Image (cartoon, rainbow, N blue to C red):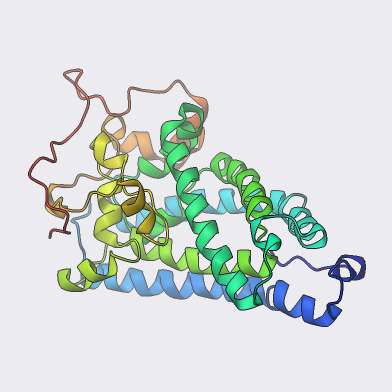
Length: 312
């Protein structure tokens, strides 16, 4: 996302010094290194904590899963990188040059513009996640993320290259509608990487801490419920960074004990279903009745007695 303004694009900001425009709209010089460092440090930290304070008991070998998930994530990253250069960077420059988008219609300090862009990028990502569960074509690709039979920080990197390709197109729409600068997009993505590694992690936080945290950000217990093999729980908790959006849309489910949560999708619980080859081909094969049980019923759970409070 380290797009660089041309002189002509910078000149389009009438009355602004070019260097000032560049300084407040562009990511830092070593943006890619900073982002990579965030991913490596947070991943390593969560991995250590997962070994010391696991939230859920593992079903598969952790080392085998990490290798599988990193390989899947690497293919997705390669595709996303190939698409970002011809799509995201030109869109970012166009938004800057033409002052397109909601935030460019109102005069405000650069810092406030960045904060609002980060919040709006995160809010509009909620709708993308919602669509990935509700639109059958998108679910074919997002299913790869959910068929992981355990949930830990490596799952945060396990996305199909097809989903990543489609998300780049959606990201272009986000940038254009919001009017987000490349700096705001980079800031949001760096924070988001840390957030998704954290909330996918299999780390048992003190319950009192997590009950406070979940009021603001997505936490491991909250997102663990989203990865449940119960359809009505998978169709909840769609927030990615700030948890506010699920409170706003009344899609938050909290009071399910983690010992009652089985990670995965019922139709894909055999180890042969989740090999690297199987999951890369999964979107292109005939789809199974994902959340149907052997007796033909849908895997749901009653929430009549569930409290609006995280449970152990």
